Structures are given as structure tokens and as C-alpha cells.
Length: 435
Image 1 (cartoon, rainbow, N blue to C red):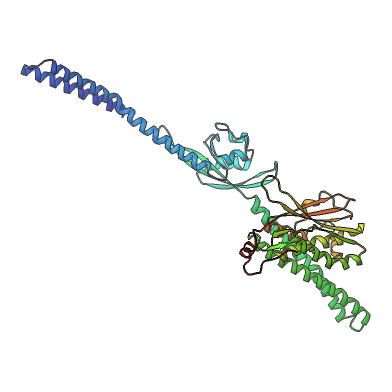
Image 2: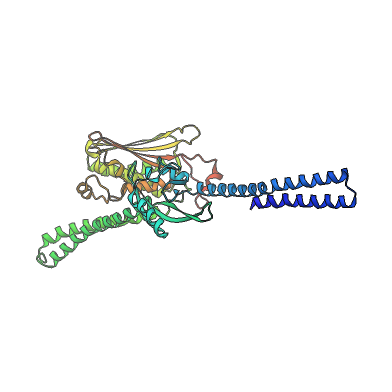
């Protein structure tokens, strides 16, 4: 087409020039002006014959580059990995997320060099043959296990010959978190059912015994009633902890706005637990600074945090005869705010390193039998973790077998600007004053 445009422009100029010169000769008016006009006509024809096609080609090339730039921008801003391969399964394009997932991925190299998954590669071959999209899974094992759903679809691309060449696009969706949540829900239901089944079975058995052989045995009746009361209390604690954990999780995304003094909370809890520690032969001590330690928080939830940590230390770490509760203020690094650190230390048997990462999981226990004897539900540290998530804090566990355990709660310090600031933080309550 461009060649025909050039030829028609040039032949038109030549024909017009010949006609113009011929008429001038017949009329006898041929001169310098006629020669100049003929030359100008020829030059114009030559220019048109040369410039018409490049203008069209430049415009087409510009549009192609613009479309390619837009496609690259869209591909780069897709957060999930996307890979485009041709019919030879050679990589044509890949976004940043795909390169981060597959470090060995390179353009114009076979996809199998970076992604060694028979299911995915066979799926690409099937899509190339049938043209129908399909889904499969891709699992990575290193450095950690991750699960992806791979959507494979045909993507026809225009060929230079005017036809279409079949390419394939791969879209990888990360299912790791959703699979983990599904597993956690299944484990939660199984564990909760198991925790409730044991006391319910005990209650049913004792009731049948009291209604049958022990109907008139007063001594057995008193003994069984005590056991039944303990089992009922165990179920009550479990249900209360489950409800408490559910409420905390529902509000976990809402940061608290009430200003509380963590020092007062620690003093109140330690004073309440001193008689229990004395019964167990444990010395419970408290070390706090003289100045207030203000944080933005929910008082009841923070009370629950300190209560769970102190009771765990008394139940499982009191073998050393000493439990220390301390509060301190630590200066933040650079421009970070100061932190309030609550530490609960015991001198008990300690915890093996393999158990520490799982201590905040629901129903996880280092020693299941000992926990049940102590009346534990396996939810205490899970509640602590979710409360601290809401308060933008964290829990640090330090322990070695035979050297005791230290639980550290780290919370950001809050320094109000004055009484007006306190009222604006919680207008429904009067401002707090610290002694």
C-alpha cells in the first residue's frame, strides 16, 4: 500500500508536467516560467512519493509503542504474579510480582527453567491445544510453603502475517493465608469440641452413677458432686475464654482511645494474687517506677493480659518459689515514641525452644495434663496476643529449660497534652489524674 501511494504521486506529477509543457509548446508560450513550474511539480511529486508512507508508518509505530507502554504499566501494577508465554512456553512478559516469586524467571527463556511444576506446564499444553481456560495449583516449598491457584488462559495475539498466534497468560493467586485460616478454623472447632467433650462425658457418667448404683451412697454422692462441680467450672472457664477471645477479635482493628496507667493495673493484679501465691509457697513481688506509665488502652483488656501472665507464672513457673513482676519505661530509637515494658519472670522449669513459637496458638499446651490439672483452657496466651494486637503492642517470650521464663509485654507510651486532650480522648469519662 505505501509503495502504490508513492508510485501514484510520482506518476501524477510526471503526467501533469508533461501536459503542462505540451500545452505551452502548442501555444508558443514555453519559457523560463514554464520550466520553473515544471520543476516544482516534479519536486512536489517526488516529496509526496517519499513522505506519504513514512508519516503513516511513524503514526502506526507511535500507536504501537503507546499501547505497549500502557500494557506494561497495567502489568506492573497488578499485585499478583502474571506471566505471558508463547506456544513454545517461552516467557514473553512477566510483572515484578512474578519475578519476585520466581527469581530464575527471564524473558525469552523457557518457563520450565524457573517454574518446575508438571501440573502447570501440562496445563499450558492443554490450553494451547483446546483453547479452554483451566485452573491448577502451584506449591512452593522454599523458603516457606506457599500455595497458589494458577489460572491459565489462551490469549490470541496478532501476527505479522495477518493471523493470530496462540499465547498463554498465567495468573497466580496466593491462597496461603486463606488455607492457613481454614486450617485454623478446622483445628479450632476440633479442639473446642474435644475440650468440651471430656467434661461432658464425665458429667454424664457421674449422673448415671448417682442415678444408679450410688443412689443411696452418701459418701460417693459427695465425692462425685465435687468432681462434677470442678468439671462444670472447667466448661464455664472455657466458654468464657472463647467468648472473650471472640469479642477481642471483633474489635481487634479498632485501636483503643482511653488513657490508662499500666502501673495501677499491675499493682491491683499483684495485690489480688498475693494470697494465691502464698498458698502455693511462692513469693510474688512487684517493681514499678514512681512516675505514671500512661498508655492508650482498654482497661479491662489490659487487666486480662496482666492477669493471664501472672497466673501462668504462678501455675507453671512457680516451682522456683519466686515470681517477679516489673514495669519500666524505655526510650524509643530515633523518632520512635518511648515504650512501656511489663515483664513477668518466674524461676520454673522453663520452656523448650520448639514450643515457644506456638505458645500463642489456641489450645496449644506444652504439657496438656499439667494444664488441665491447673484449670487452664489453653486460650490465655491467645487472648494476650490478640489484645496486644489491638493495642499495637507485642509479646516477647524468653525461656530456657531449667532457667525459668520471662514474658515481656511492650506497649507504646502515650503522653497527653493536658486535660483538654484527655477529655477529647474519652469524652464520656472524666479525665484521669495520676498520683
